[in-house]
Length: 431
Image (cartoon, rainbow, N blue to C red; front, side):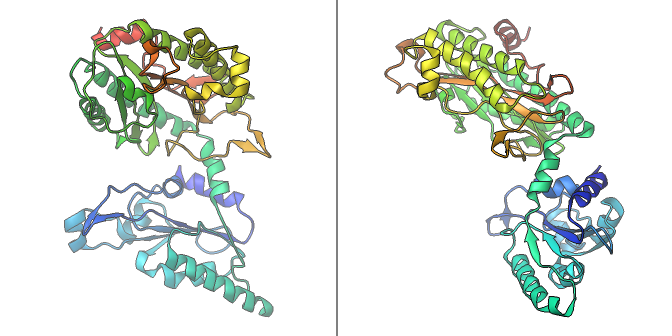
């Protein structure tokens, strides 16, 4: 899988090109304590090497095509921090044509880049590497008079890489289906805990426990568990308040599985029953999401998906008394943004807000098979919004699924997580 990706990437580069890719480094929290390590997504995509302080050189023409620089085996260090593949593992387990200790990177760069015209590299990741590349580029200008080939341009590789990452292959989709299955189990565990007096962090703990118990790396992003009015805060992560009967708890949480993210939002009734205004708002958002899913197919764009959701949402806002005038007037004026202030979709993959441009030549790009994105309309009525009907204040609803474009429509990867009112209530009761 990774070798095939490297071949595709090399095929897309210009003749005489080389790519220098840097993996993620350990980030210090304090003294000798580090934040949890996660590999740079682009580096993982091409190498599958998920250990810190690594670099890869990919050459299109001449010499070994794939060189890895990794931390050398060190029994003392491994006593403290665990196994390192080392140079031997890079060759045996990760398909490198040659491998060296990471400490030799700067010294070997001139030889690795010598016959290359273009270096594909993201500047700003490592000052020492950047300085060496600039030095080599300066030398290239002087040596070019003698007819010696050397790097003459540094090009950002992300345009090529991110276009590749936008289209998921069959293996990636299988992993994302598994991430969705794990996420379903976690949401089910949390939904059944949604009772009066239970704290938001207890549901968050159930989510995290299930993600890991089922083989995930944990949450793909910080889980949002917002009860009552906390659901009107889009990225609420305090998760420290008790739940109250008669309200909803919004859970925006997804598992990371084998590097890939799931991203799902559901709203569960505390006590197991939707009531009054909360149900009215929920039904509006559900209808908006269904309208957006209906147009999620090849040839349409994410703008089409957003506009389908928006039209239904705004009509619902007018019917609920949140907006005056017609839906057309509200859309034209933007007055709806008081209650719906975000877009409906984003790409999904190795990152929760994944790689890939949304427009080509200034126009929204058409959806194509293999693209994966979210569909997540919402309606949020803050307590402070005095112009809103009093009975609607403090209600926030978002419903989100993960969608893969197919040849003739789409596959809803997270369809097994209930969202119709009767199904959600039964789920919360454990029925």
